[in-house]
Structures are given as C-alpha cells and as structure tokens.
Image (cartoon, rainbow, N blue to C red; front, side, top):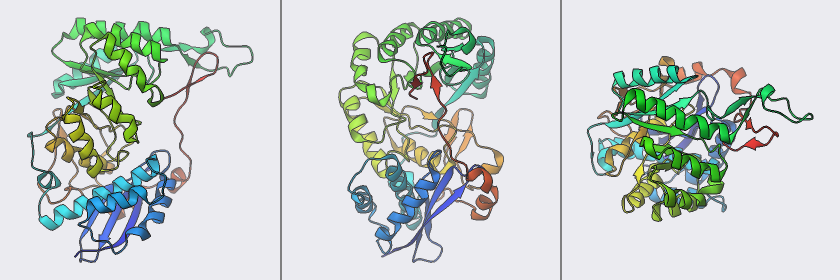
Length: 404
C-alpha cells in the first residue's frame, strides 16, 4: 500500500498566482502534481493546503474517491472556492500517482480516448471591427474552427467615455462606464459585420462576462440568434441563473455557463432542465478530475456538452487535467485554449501541446506533466507575489458595480 507522506504547495509564476500541489509518497521517486491556482487568493489556498494536509498524511493514495469525500466534508461547511481548489489539486495529484503506478496515462484509466485530439477555441479581439476581423482571420489561418470574438476588454462594446456619460456631480469621475443599451447595439452589429465578411463557415462565440441586467441578457440572446453562434458564454451571473428559463423559451442561441460555479446546486438544475448547452466549470474549481468526471456524466444524459474553463490566469497543470477529461468524455464540446509564455512552459515538461486549433496530450504515465521546482522558484518575483490581487471593476454611470 502506497501512502501519502507529504502534501506540498509550490507557488510560482512571476506574480505568484499559480499554486501547484505536490503529493509525495513513501515510494522512492513517486509523487503526483495538481493545480490549486487561484489568481486572487494564492496565499489563502496555500494556508488551506497546509491545514488539510495532516488529515491525509498516511492515507492510501489509491483511495481517490474516499480521500475526495474526506476533504469535501473536512471543514463541515463545503462547496467554497478555496476548499474546492485545494481538493482539486490533491485529486489531480492522486490521479497522476495512480497513472504512474499503472504505467498508463490518466485518460487510459478513465476508459480510453473518444477522440484523437482536443479541439480548442481561440480568443480573438480588437478595439474596432477591422482589428477584430483581422484577428479572427489570423486564427482561421492557424486552423481554429471555433473562435471567440470580443471588442476590446470584457464588456467591450458597452463602454461609454466617462466625460460623455452624464455622471452625477458627486460621482466617481470614472474614465468609462458600462451601458447595457450600448452593448445591445454594438454586439449584434459586431456579429453582423463578421458574418458579412466571413460567412457562416467559421464557428463564433462571445463572452458576455455577466455584465448585463437579466432582462437585457435575454434580449441579447434573441438579437444574436440570426448569427448562429457556437455558444454565448456567461450571459448571466450565478445569482441570476433562473433567467435561463426565459432565454430558452424565447430563442435558440446556445448557452455556455459555469465559469464561476463551485456548488452542484448551481449547475445541476441547468443541466437537468436542459437550460444550457455547455457547462464551463473550471476543473480546479469544480473539485478536480473525480468530480468533473461526474459532472460530464450527468451532462451526457441531458444532451449538455463540456467546455471546461481555462482563461489567462490558469496554469498548464489544470489545462492538462482538462485535456484528459476532454479525451475520454463522449459529450465533450470544446476546450478553451490558453497560451503561456516560453519561460512558463519551461517549468512544466510534458505540458499539453497547442497546435492548429487542437490540444494534444502525450503518452506518459499519469497526467504526463511535471514541474521543475528550481525553475518555478526562480520565476517567482517575491515583491510582485506579496501584492494582493483583485478582480477589475466595471461600473455603470451612477457608480454601481457591474458583477463579473
């Protein structure tokens, strides 16, 4: 019986926002790694790993489900983003170990592949329609079949210059404000332009990033129906997901949701009532491979596809865990791509390979990815890592915060 001897957090990236869990065992040289990154709460995650570790020291590494359940209930209150992240990092590491013991990739342990590689969607952007069109064409030439389209930052197309927005005299003097009606005007116009120039051969998506009031979110989904999106992403905030019933009743625009989900009560009704088409939970926020495998199975029986979330703040270990799930899930839909800097890739030998719009795993045992701890430590800038990170705020003309 192989036992856990240590659970070690490794903090890296220049700004310290990546946390990699390393689970060591009593077998010489046998360990596993997993992703426990949280862009805004890295130090909190590390403290939680160190708090939970004593519960698992001496446990049998083969008992992945039992360990998952132990961590799940270890703090009595559950389904919070920090413990989910810790739980996921440990879970990925245990699957990595199991694969190494079996001398098989994790995707083989999970039943074998359903596809040769993992289609990914690109992130195209531009400050105006011409720039965006050029960026979409660039990704099309690289081989991407699905491309996300954004006008500038999240909420782009909905921003008005603060000086022209009519802010209150005692207001915050914001340089820009978000306006629902501007967004409803400009985003359909964006897709009208792209379809006119590019046709319907390329599949297009868009991320609303929960910026709209619920009734305007329904209106946007209806307005975009003629442009046949591959999906419309995060149309509603987690607090307003019941509005997906109104969306479904009024249009056929496919819906992708779940980037902020951490609780099964958030995604289960949307899946079982067939109110969304793609679930976008991040593997490290959904509890790891063990739990996201269960989410994928639930989705399969209700005609919902997976589109595990990545994003620029994510790390190559979480990406690799997603790729293993993508390879074995019949109801896989699309994978969000992620580009990393050369010096970041250099930390993780065996990382997934992104080429021509596809992600490729390798045939190494376990997750197939490792971490160079010396390079990880060298990349970290202590001064930048000491600074707290916060989600950027957009506001409406009266100063109200827009929930991302």
